[in-house]
Amino acid sequence: MKKVFQLLTVLMFSVVFPESVFAQHHHSHASHYEENWSEADHHPDHIVLNLTEDPSTSMSVTWRTDTSIRAGIAEIALATAAPKFWRYAQSYNAQTETLDAREVLHAGVASNYHSVTFTGLLPDTLYAYRVGDGRYWSEWFQFMTSSDKAKPFSFLYVGDAQNNILDLWARLIREGYRTAPEAGFIIHAGDLVNQAHSEQDWHEWFTAGSFIHSMLPSISTPGNHEVQSLNQEDASKNIRSLSVQWRPQFNLPLNGVPGYEETVYYIDYNDARIISLNSNYAPQEQKAWLEEVLKENSRKWTIITFHHPIYSASARRDNPLLRNQWKPVFDKYHVDLVLQGHDHSYARGRTKAYVENVLDGVNARDYTGTVYVVSVSGGKMYSLEPTGWDAFEAVEQERAAENTQLFQVISIDGDRLSYESYTAIGELYDAFDLRKSPDGTPNRFVERKGEAIPERRHQNTIPYEDNLPESLETKVLSENPGYQILRVFYFEEVEQKGYYVRLLKENTRMDIKIDTTGKVLEGN
Ligand SMILES: [Fe+2]
Image 1 (cartoon, rainbow, N blue to C red):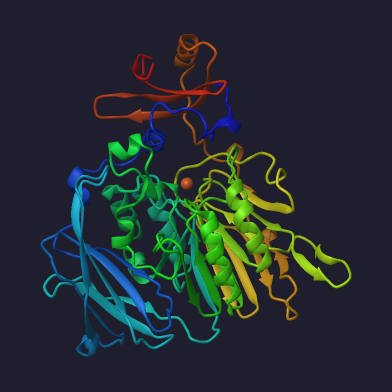
Image 2 (cartoon, rainbow, N blue to C red; image 1 turned 90 degrees about the vertical axis):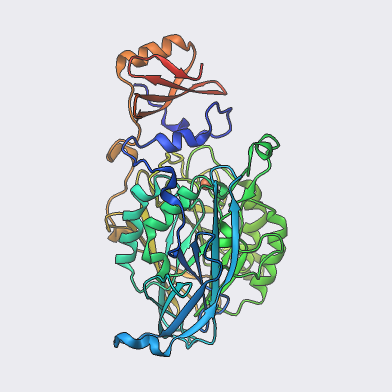
Protein backbone atom coordinates (compact mmCIF):
# COMPACT_ATOMS: atom_id res chain seq x y z
CA MET A 1 0.00 0.00 0.00
CA LYS A 2 1.20 3.48 -0.82
CA LYS A 3 1.86 5.19 2.48
CA VAL A 4 1.15 8.90 2.70
CA PHE A 5 2.74 9.57 6.05
CA GLN A 6 2.99 13.34 5.82
CA LEU A 7 -0.74 13.60 5.23
CA LEU A 8 -1.83 11.46 8.15
CA THR A 9 -2.65 14.34 10.41
CA VAL A 10 -4.44 16.63 7.99
CA LEU A 11 -7.17 18.35 9.92
CA MET A 12 -8.41 21.15 7.71
CA PHE A 13 -10.36 19.06 5.21
CA SER A 14 -14.02 18.10 5.21
CA VAL A 15 -14.88 15.15 7.41
CA VAL A 16 -17.54 12.61 6.65
CA PHE A 17 -17.35 10.59 9.86
CA PRO A 18 -16.51 12.54 12.99
CA GLU A 19 -12.81 12.41 13.95
CA SER A 20 -13.80 10.19 16.85
CA VAL A 21 -14.76 7.31 14.53
CA PHE A 22 -11.11 6.93 13.66
CA ALA A 23 -10.05 7.66 17.21
CA GLN A 24 -12.39 5.04 18.64
CA HIS A 25 -11.62 2.33 16.16
CA HIS A 26 -7.91 2.73 15.70
CA HIS A 27 -7.30 -0.11 18.08
CA SER A 28 -9.23 -3.22 17.16
CA HIS A 29 -8.31 -4.91 20.45
CA ALA A 30 -9.95 -2.24 22.61
CA SER A 31 -12.30 -3.40 25.37
CA HIS A 32 -16.04 -2.96 25.16
CA TYR A 33 -17.83 -1.43 28.17
CA GLU A 34 -21.51 -1.88 29.04
CA GLU A 35 -23.54 1.30 29.14
CA ASN A 36 -23.94 1.22 32.94
CA TRP A 37 -20.24 0.51 33.53
CA SER A 38 -19.44 4.14 34.32
CA GLU A 39 -22.45 4.86 36.58
CA ALA A 40 -21.91 6.21 40.09
CA ASP A 41 -23.25 4.41 43.16
CA HIS A 42 -23.41 5.05 46.94
CA HIS A 43 -19.73 4.37 47.25
CA PRO A 44 -17.34 7.30 46.57
CA ASP A 45 -15.33 7.09 43.35
CA HIS A 46 -13.50 9.50 40.99
CA ILE A 47 -11.57 10.71 44.06
CA VAL A 48 -9.11 13.32 42.90
CA LEU A 49 -6.76 15.66 44.78
CA ASN A 50 -6.13 19.15 43.47
CA LEU A 51 -3.54 21.66 44.61
CA THR A 52 -4.76 24.94 46.05
CA GLU A 53 -3.04 28.30 45.71
CA ASP A 54 -1.04 27.38 48.82
CA PRO A 55 -0.33 23.63 48.85
CA SER A 56 1.88 23.92 51.96
CA THR A 57 -1.14 24.47 54.22
CA SER A 58 -4.17 23.26 52.25
CA MET A 59 -5.36 20.59 49.79
CA SER A 60 -8.60 20.04 47.85
CA VAL A 61 -10.37 16.77 47.16
CA THR A 62 -13.40 15.96 45.01
CA TRP A 63 -15.38 12.76 44.59
CA ARG A 64 -18.50 11.36 42.93
CA THR A 65 -21.53 9.41 44.17
CA ASP A 66 -25.01 8.73 42.87
CA THR A 67 -27.64 11.38 43.54
CA SER A 68 -29.04 9.57 46.59
CA ILE A 69 -25.95 10.64 48.57
CA ARG A 70 -26.88 14.24 49.29
CA ALA A 71 -24.15 15.21 51.74
CA GLY A 72 -20.47 14.33 51.74
CA ILE A 73 -17.94 14.23 54.55
CA ALA A 74 -14.14 14.10 54.40
CA GLU A 75 -11.93 13.18 57.34
CA ILE A 76 -8.25 14.04 57.70
CA ALA A 77 -5.59 13.14 60.27
CA LEU A 78 -1.83 13.22 60.66
CA ALA A 79 -0.71 9.90 59.22
CA THR A 80 0.97 7.61 61.74
CA ALA A 81 1.94 3.93 61.61
CA ALA A 82 -0.55 3.12 64.38
CA PRO A 83 -3.83 2.15 62.69
CA LYS A 84 -6.05 4.25 64.93
CA PHE A 85 -4.59 7.54 63.69
CA TRP A 86 -8.20 8.37 62.88
CA ARG A 87 -8.94 9.00 66.57
CA TYR A 88 -7.49 12.48 65.94
CA ALA A 89 -9.19 13.02 62.59
CA GLN A 90 -10.88 16.28 61.75
CA SER A 91 -14.13 16.16 59.82
CA TYR A 92 -15.13 18.50 56.97
CA ASN A 93 -18.57 18.86 55.43
CA ALA A 94 -18.41 18.79 51.65
CA GLN A 95 -19.91 21.18 49.18
CA THR A 96 -22.25 18.98 47.16
CA GLU A 97 -23.58 19.72 43.69
CA THR A 98 -25.73 17.64 41.39
CA LEU A 99 -24.55 17.33 37.81
CA ASP A 100 -27.64 16.46 35.80
CA ALA A 101 -26.14 15.67 32.40
CA ARG A 102 -28.86 13.27 31.26
CA GLU A 103 -29.55 15.41 28.18
CA VAL A 104 -25.90 16.08 27.39
CA LEU A 105 -24.31 14.39 24.38
CA HIS A 106 -22.28 11.30 25.43
CA ALA A 107 -22.91 11.98 29.15
CA GLY A 108 -26.42 10.72 29.81
CA VAL A 109 -25.96 10.64 33.59
CA ALA A 110 -26.85 12.44 36.77
CA SER A 111 -24.35 12.25 39.63
CA ASN A 112 -23.48 14.14 42.78
CA TYR A 113 -20.04 15.67 43.18
CA HIS A 114 -18.65 16.51 46.61
CA SER A 115 -15.67 18.72 47.31
CA VAL A 116 -13.67 19.74 50.37
CA THR A 117 -10.63 21.94 50.90
CA PHE A 118 -8.58 20.87 53.91
CA THR A 119 -7.05 23.97 55.52
CA GLY A 120 -4.66 24.80 58.36
CA LEU A 121 -2.35 21.91 57.44
CA LEU A 122 1.32 21.74 58.41
CA PRO A 123 3.89 22.13 55.61
CA ASP A 124 5.92 19.14 54.46
CA THR A 125 3.74 16.73 56.42
CA LEU A 126 2.12 13.39 55.62
CA TYR A 127 -1.66 13.30 56.05
CA ALA A 128 -4.24 10.51 55.77
CA TYR A 129 -7.76 11.27 54.53
CA ARG A 130 -10.90 9.51 53.44
CA VAL A 131 -14.15 10.63 51.83
CA GLY A 132 -17.73 9.40 52.07
CA ASP A 133 -21.03 10.27 53.68
CA GLY A 134 -20.73 8.79 57.18
CA ARG A 135 -21.78 5.31 56.07
CA TYR A 136 -20.07 4.55 52.78
CA TRP A 137 -16.40 5.47 52.92
CA SER A 138 -13.38 5.32 50.66
CA GLU A 139 -10.15 3.78 51.93
CA TRP A 140 -7.69 6.09 53.70
CA PHE A 141 -5.31 7.74 51.27
CA GLN A 142 -2.06 9.54 52.14
CA PHE A 143 -0.62 12.73 50.69
CA MET A 144 2.21 15.16 51.49
CA THR A 145 1.77 18.89 51.80
CA SER A 146 4.46 20.94 50.05
CA SER A 147 7.26 22.59 51.96
CA ASP A 148 7.07 26.28 52.83
CA LYS A 149 10.81 26.49 52.13
CA ALA A 150 12.74 25.98 48.91
CA LYS A 151 13.05 22.23 49.39
CA PRO A 152 13.84 19.87 46.45
CA PHE A 153 10.73 18.40 44.82
CA SER A 154 9.63 16.74 41.62
CA PHE A 155 6.49 16.39 39.56
CA LEU A 156 5.10 14.39 36.65
CA TYR A 157 3.92 15.83 33.33
CA VAL A 158 1.90 13.92 30.73
CA GLY A 159 0.50 14.84 27.30
CA ASP A 160 -2.80 13.61 25.85
CA ALA A 161 -4.26 10.45 27.43
CA GLN A 162 -7.39 10.82 25.29
CA ASN A 163 -8.02 7.48 23.54
CA ASN A 164 -8.45 3.92 24.79
CA ILE A 165 -7.61 5.47 28.13
CA LEU A 166 -8.12 2.44 30.31
CA ASP A 167 -6.64 0.05 27.73
CA LEU A 168 -3.42 1.96 27.13
CA TRP A 169 -2.99 4.96 29.45
CA ALA A 170 -3.26 2.86 32.63
CA ARG A 171 0.16 1.26 32.10
CA LEU A 172 1.73 4.64 31.30
CA ILE A 173 0.49 6.54 34.35
CA ARG A 174 1.25 3.58 36.63
CA GLU A 175 4.81 3.39 35.28
CA GLY A 176 5.04 7.15 35.91
CA TYR A 177 3.94 6.68 39.52
CA ARG A 178 6.40 3.83 39.96
CA THR A 179 9.23 5.99 38.64
CA ALA A 180 8.40 9.07 40.73
CA PRO A 181 6.20 7.99 43.66
CA GLU A 182 7.35 11.01 45.66
CA ALA A 183 6.14 13.48 42.96
CA GLY A 184 4.36 16.50 44.41
CA PHE A 185 1.75 16.62 41.63
CA ILE A 186 0.92 15.61 38.05
CA ILE A 187 0.46 18.06 35.17
CA HIS A 188 -2.10 16.84 32.60
CA ALA A 189 -1.56 19.00 29.50
CA GLY A 190 -5.07 18.65 28.02
CA ASP A 191 -7.11 16.07 26.12
CA LEU A 192 -7.42 13.91 29.20
CA VAL A 193 -10.41 12.38 27.39
CA ASN A 194 -11.63 12.12 23.81
CA GLN A 195 -15.28 13.15 24.24
CA ALA A 196 -15.56 16.12 26.59
CA HIS A 197 -18.81 15.09 28.28
CA SER A 198 -18.51 11.30 28.07
CA GLU A 199 -18.96 9.72 31.48
CA GLN A 200 -17.35 6.55 30.13
CA ASP A 201 -14.23 8.43 29.01
CA TRP A 202 -13.90 10.08 32.43
CA HIS A 203 -14.54 6.76 34.17
CA GLU A 204 -11.73 5.24 32.10
CA TRP A 205 -9.44 8.12 33.15
CA PHE A 206 -10.28 7.65 36.83
CA THR A 207 -10.05 3.86 36.66
CA ALA A 208 -6.72 3.96 34.81
CA GLY A 209 -5.18 6.37 37.34
CA SER A 210 -7.02 4.74 40.26
CA PHE A 211 -5.45 5.66 43.63
CA ILE A 212 -2.74 7.73 41.92
CA HIS A 213 -5.38 10.45 41.37
CA SER A 214 -6.22 10.27 45.08
CA MET A 215 -2.59 10.49 46.28
CA LEU A 216 -0.78 12.78 43.80
CA PRO A 217 -2.67 16.02 43.17
CA SER A 218 -3.55 16.93 39.59
CA ILE A 219 -2.93 20.16 37.71
CA SER A 220 -5.19 19.79 34.68
CA THR A 221 -5.52 22.12 31.72
CA PRO A 222 -8.25 21.65 29.09
CA GLY A 223 -7.54 20.52 25.52
CA ASN A 224 -9.73 20.84 22.44
CA HIS A 225 -11.34 17.52 23.35
CA GLU A 226 -12.52 19.01 26.65
CA VAL A 227 -14.65 21.56 24.77
CA GLN A 228 -17.46 20.07 22.69
CA SER A 229 -21.12 20.67 21.91
CA LEU A 230 -23.65 19.81 24.63
CA ASN A 231 -26.31 18.63 22.18
CA GLN A 232 -27.24 18.45 18.49
CA GLU A 233 -28.58 22.00 18.46
CA ASP A 234 -25.27 23.40 19.76
CA ALA A 235 -23.44 21.16 17.30
CA SER A 236 -25.42 22.60 14.37
CA LYS A 237 -24.45 26.12 15.52
CA ASN A 238 -20.86 25.09 16.25
CA ILE A 239 -21.20 26.07 19.93
CA ARG A 240 -18.78 24.23 22.17
CA SER A 241 -18.74 24.09 25.98
CA LEU A 242 -16.24 22.98 28.58
CA SER A 243 -16.73 19.37 29.68
CA VAL A 244 -19.74 19.36 32.04
CA GLN A 245 -17.72 17.18 34.42
CA TRP A 246 -14.69 19.54 34.60
CA ARG A 247 -15.82 22.05 37.23
CA PRO A 248 -17.82 19.61 39.40
CA GLN A 249 -15.08 16.96 39.48
CA PHE A 250 -12.04 19.22 39.89
CA ASN A 251 -11.40 21.80 42.58
CA LEU A 252 -8.71 23.94 40.99
CA PRO A 253 -7.78 27.53 41.98
CA LEU A 254 -10.13 30.38 41.02
CA ASN A 255 -7.39 33.00 40.66
CA GLY A 256 -7.51 33.21 36.84
CA VAL A 257 -9.50 35.08 34.22
CA PRO A 258 -13.24 35.43 35.01
CA GLY A 259 -15.25 33.14 32.72
CA TYR A 260 -12.40 30.62 32.54
CA GLU A 261 -12.47 29.40 36.14
CA GLU A 262 -10.48 26.26 36.93
CA THR A 263 -8.87 26.33 33.47
CA VAL A 264 -6.76 29.50 33.84
CA TYR A 265 -4.98 29.68 37.21
CA TYR A 266 -1.64 29.59 38.96
CA ILE A 267 -0.20 27.61 41.86
CA ASP A 268 2.93 28.34 43.87
CA TYR A 269 4.64 25.12 44.86
CA ASN A 270 7.86 25.54 46.87
CA ASP A 271 10.14 27.58 44.65
CA ALA A 272 8.09 27.32 41.45
CA ARG A 273 5.07 29.09 39.99
CA ILE A 274 2.99 26.75 37.83
CA ILE A 275 0.54 28.44 35.46
CA SER A 276 -2.30 26.87 33.48
CA LEU A 277 -3.61 28.67 30.39
CA ASN A 278 -6.71 27.68 28.39
CA SER A 279 -5.50 27.49 24.78
CA ASN A 280 -9.06 26.97 23.48
CA TYR A 281 -10.18 30.55 24.04
CA ALA A 282 -9.33 34.24 24.34
CA PRO A 283 -5.52 34.27 24.13
CA GLN A 284 -5.46 38.06 24.29
CA GLU A 285 -7.48 38.26 27.52
CA GLN A 286 -5.25 35.63 29.08
CA LYS A 287 -2.14 37.47 27.91
CA ALA A 288 -3.04 40.51 30.04
CA TRP A 289 -3.66 38.29 33.07
CA LEU A 290 -0.46 36.33 32.45
CA GLU A 291 1.55 39.53 32.29
CA GLU A 292 0.29 40.49 35.78
CA VAL A 293 0.93 37.02 37.21
CA LEU A 294 4.49 36.98 35.84
CA LYS A 295 5.26 40.56 36.84
CA GLU A 296 4.65 39.93 40.53
CA ASN A 297 6.15 36.41 40.49
CA SER A 298 8.84 36.04 43.16
CA ARG A 299 9.40 32.30 42.66
CA LYS A 300 12.67 31.16 41.15
CA TRP A 301 11.15 28.87 38.50
CA THR A 302 8.24 29.50 36.13
CA ILE A 303 6.50 26.65 34.35
CA ILE A 304 3.50 27.13 32.07
CA THR A 305 1.16 24.46 30.75
CA PHE A 306 -1.57 24.53 28.09
CA HIS A 307 -2.71 22.23 25.32
CA HIS A 308 -2.06 23.60 21.79
CA PRO A 309 1.69 23.93 21.14
CA ILE A 310 3.44 27.23 20.36
CA TYR A 311 5.64 25.12 18.03
CA SER A 312 3.73 22.16 16.61
CA ALA A 313 5.51 18.83 16.48
CA SER A 314 3.28 17.11 13.94
CA ALA A 315 2.77 17.80 10.28
CA ARG A 316 0.27 20.41 9.07
CA ARG A 317 -0.58 21.77 12.50
CA ASP A 318 0.14 25.32 13.63
CA ASN A 319 -1.19 27.75 16.24
CA PRO A 320 0.17 31.14 15.10
CA LEU A 321 -2.32 33.12 17.20
CA LEU A 322 -1.02 31.62 20.45
CA ARG A 323 2.56 32.08 19.33
CA ASN A 324 1.99 35.75 18.46
CA GLN A 325 0.11 36.52 21.65
CA TRP A 326 1.90 34.52 24.32
CA LYS A 327 5.48 33.90 23.24
CA PRO A 328 6.59 37.58 23.64
CA VAL A 329 5.34 37.42 27.25
CA PHE A 330 7.19 34.15 27.87
CA ASP A 331 10.34 35.81 26.45
CA LYS A 332 9.95 38.98 28.48
CA TYR A 333 9.61 37.18 31.81
CA HIS A 334 12.11 34.39 31.05
CA VAL A 335 9.64 31.53 31.47
CA ASP A 336 11.73 28.41 32.04
CA LEU A 337 9.57 25.64 30.68
CA VAL A 338 6.39 25.33 28.57
CA LEU A 339 4.61 21.94 28.74
CA GLN A 340 2.09 21.14 25.99
CA GLY A 341 0.23 18.31 24.23
CA HIS A 342 -2.16 18.00 21.27
CA ASP A 343 0.22 16.69 18.58
CA HIS A 344 0.39 12.98 19.53
CA SER A 345 4.14 12.91 19.10
CA TYR A 346 7.17 14.24 21.02
CA ALA A 347 9.31 17.31 20.43
CA ARG A 348 11.59 19.36 22.68
CA GLY A 349 13.68 22.42 21.95
CA ARG A 350 14.75 25.90 22.96
CA THR A 351 14.12 29.43 21.78
CA LYS A 352 16.76 32.11 21.61
CA ALA A 353 17.34 34.02 24.80
CA TYR A 354 17.16 37.80 24.61
CA VAL A 355 19.43 39.74 26.93
CA GLU A 356 19.84 43.41 27.53
CA ASN A 357 23.04 44.69 25.98
CA VAL A 358 24.11 48.03 27.38
CA LEU A 359 25.65 49.20 24.12
CA ASP A 360 23.28 47.85 21.48
CA GLY A 361 19.93 47.44 23.24
CA VAL A 362 18.32 43.98 23.28
CA ASN A 363 20.28 41.17 21.66
CA ALA A 364 19.54 37.52 21.05
CA ARG A 365 22.28 35.58 22.78
CA ASP A 366 21.89 31.88 22.01
CA TYR A 367 19.40 29.03 22.27
CA THR A 368 19.03 29.05 26.05
CA GLY A 369 15.65 30.72 26.24
CA THR A 370 12.38 29.01 27.18
CA VAL A 371 12.34 25.25 26.66
CA TYR A 372 9.21 24.05 24.83
CA VAL A 373 7.95 20.46 25.05
CA VAL A 374 5.16 18.60 23.25
CA SER A 375 4.41 15.12 24.58
CA VAL A 376 1.83 12.32 24.37
CA SER A 377 0.90 9.74 26.99
CA GLY A 378 -2.04 7.87 25.41
CA GLY A 379 -2.22 5.44 22.52
CA LYS A 380 -3.11 7.76 19.62
CA MET A 381 -0.09 8.57 17.44
CA TYR A 382 0.56 11.05 14.64
CA SER A 383 3.58 11.58 12.42
CA LEU A 384 6.16 14.30 13.02
CA GLU A 385 6.63 17.26 10.74
CA PRO A 386 9.68 16.00 8.80
CA THR A 387 11.42 19.39 8.87
CA GLY A 388 11.09 19.74 12.65
CA TRP A 389 10.80 23.39 13.68
CA ASP A 390 12.84 24.71 10.76
CA ALA A 391 9.86 26.73 9.54
CA PHE A 392 9.84 28.76 12.77
CA GLU A 393 12.19 31.57 13.66
CA ALA A 394 14.62 31.57 16.57
CA VAL A 395 13.82 28.12 17.88
CA GLU A 396 15.74 24.87 17.68
CA GLN A 397 14.14 21.42 17.98
CA GLU A 398 16.59 19.13 19.74
CA ARG A 399 14.79 15.84 20.39
CA ALA A 400 11.73 14.14 18.88
CA ALA A 401 9.79 10.86 18.91
CA GLU A 402 6.98 9.12 17.09
CA ASN A 403 4.80 6.17 18.03
CA THR A 404 5.89 6.26 21.69
CA GLN A 405 3.90 6.71 24.90
CA LEU A 406 5.85 8.97 27.26
CA PHE A 407 5.74 10.55 30.73
CA GLN A 408 8.08 13.16 32.17
CA VAL A 409 9.63 13.61 35.60
CA ILE A 410 10.80 17.15 36.39
CA SER A 411 12.85 17.78 39.52
CA ILE A 412 13.75 21.14 41.04
CA ASP A 413 16.58 21.50 43.53
CA GLY A 414 17.54 25.10 44.23
CA ASP A 415 19.22 26.52 41.13
CA ARG A 416 18.91 23.28 39.13
CA LEU A 417 15.93 21.94 37.20
CA SER A 418 16.33 18.38 35.86
CA TYR A 419 14.00 17.19 33.13
CA GLU A 420 13.65 13.53 32.23
CA SER A 421 11.28 11.94 29.72
CA TYR A 422 10.57 8.20 30.00
CA THR A 423 8.82 5.74 27.70
CA ALA A 424 5.86 3.63 28.87
CA ILE A 425 8.31 0.87 29.74
CA GLY A 426 10.56 3.13 31.80
CA GLU A 427 13.43 3.75 29.37
CA LEU A 428 15.03 7.21 29.59
CA TYR A 429 14.08 8.92 26.32
CA ASP A 430 15.18 12.52 26.81
CA ALA A 431 16.97 14.56 29.48
CA PHE A 432 18.42 17.99 30.13
CA ASP A 433 19.20 20.29 33.06
CA LEU A 434 18.63 24.00 33.46
CA ARG A 435 20.87 25.99 35.80
CA LYS A 436 19.88 29.41 37.11
CA SER A 437 22.59 32.00 36.71
CA PRO A 438 23.30 34.08 39.82
CA ASP A 439 23.34 37.32 37.81
CA GLY A 440 19.88 36.88 36.29
CA THR A 441 21.19 36.15 32.79
CA PRO A 442 19.52 33.29 30.84
CA ASN A 443 19.61 29.75 32.24
CA ARG A 444 22.58 27.57 31.48
CA PHE A 445 21.41 24.57 29.45
CA VAL A 446 22.98 21.15 29.98
CA GLU A 447 22.09 18.65 27.23
CA ARG A 448 21.72 15.09 28.58
CA LYS A 449 19.99 13.29 25.70
CA GLY A 450 23.22 11.34 25.26
CA GLU A 451 22.11 9.27 28.28
CA ALA A 452 18.91 8.24 26.46
CA ILE A 453 17.92 5.42 24.08
CA PRO A 454 18.11 5.98 20.30
CA GLU A 455 15.48 8.07 18.54
CA ARG A 456 12.15 6.31 17.96
CA ARG A 457 10.22 6.87 14.70
CA HIS A 458 7.45 5.09 12.81
CA GLN A 459 10.14 3.45 10.70
CA ASN A 460 11.84 1.64 13.60
CA THR A 461 8.81 0.77 15.76
CA ILE A 462 5.78 -1.57 15.51
CA PRO A 463 3.42 -0.37 12.73
CA TYR A 464 0.72 1.96 14.04
CA GLU A 465 -1.58 1.92 11.02
CA ASP A 466 -3.30 -1.16 9.62
CA ASN A 467 -2.99 -2.15 5.97
CA LEU A 468 -5.69 -3.05 3.45
CA PRO A 469 -5.13 -6.41 1.76
CA GLU A 470 -3.97 -5.82 -1.81
CA SER A 471 -7.21 -6.98 -3.45
CA LEU A 472 -9.26 -4.57 -1.33
CA GLU A 473 -6.85 -1.73 -1.98
CA THR A 474 -7.24 -2.24 -5.73
CA LYS A 475 -11.04 -2.35 -5.37
CA VAL A 476 -11.26 0.80 -3.22
CA LEU A 477 -8.95 2.79 -5.50
CA SER A 478 -10.80 1.73 -8.67
CA GLU A 479 -14.19 2.61 -7.14
CA ASN A 480 -12.90 6.01 -6.03
CA PRO A 481 -10.88 7.35 -8.97
CA GLY A 482 -8.38 10.07 -8.15
CA TYR A 483 -8.32 9.29 -4.43
CA GLN A 484 -5.35 8.20 -2.35
CA ILE A 485 -5.62 6.02 0.76
CA LEU A 486 -4.71 8.19 3.76
CA ARG A 487 -5.21 5.84 6.70
CA VAL A 488 -6.73 2.45 7.42
CA PHE A 489 -8.05 1.00 10.68
CA TYR A 490 -9.16 -2.57 11.00
CA PHE A 491 -12.25 -3.13 13.18
CA GLU A 492 -14.00 -6.10 14.74
CA GLU A 493 -17.58 -5.61 15.85
CA VAL A 494 -19.99 -8.23 17.14
CA GLU A 495 -21.35 -9.19 13.73
CA GLN A 496 -18.98 -7.40 11.42
CA LYS A 497 -15.31 -7.20 10.60
CA GLY A 498 -13.75 -4.77 8.17
CA TYR A 499 -11.87 -1.52 7.70
CA TYR A 500 -12.34 2.19 8.18
CA VAL A 501 -10.62 3.81 5.22
CA ARG A 502 -9.85 7.52 4.93
CA LEU A 503 -9.40 8.71 1.35
CA LEU A 504 -8.00 11.96 0.01
CA LYS A 505 -8.40 13.68 -3.38
CA GLU A 506 -6.73 17.09 -3.50
CA ASN A 507 -8.46 18.92 -0.63
CA THR A 508 -11.38 16.55 -0.19
CA ARG A 509 -11.29 13.95 2.52
CA MET A 510 -13.73 11.01 2.51
CA ASP A 511 -14.21 8.24 5.05
CA ILE A 512 -15.69 4.86 4.16
CA LYS A 513 -16.37 1.74 6.16
CA ILE A 514 -16.05 -1.54 4.28
CA ASP A 515 -16.39 -5.19 5.20
CA THR A 516 -13.71 -7.80 4.53
CA THR A 517 -15.04 -8.37 0.98
CA GLY A 518 -14.79 -4.64 0.18
CA LYS A 519 -18.54 -4.00 0.33
CA VAL A 520 -19.18 -0.42 1.43
CA LEU A 521 -21.11 -0.33 4.72
CA GLU A 522 -21.03 3.43 5.33
CA GLY A 523 -19.89 6.44 3.34
CA ASN A 524 -20.06 6.77 -0.45
FE1 LIG B 1 -5.76 18.00 21.14
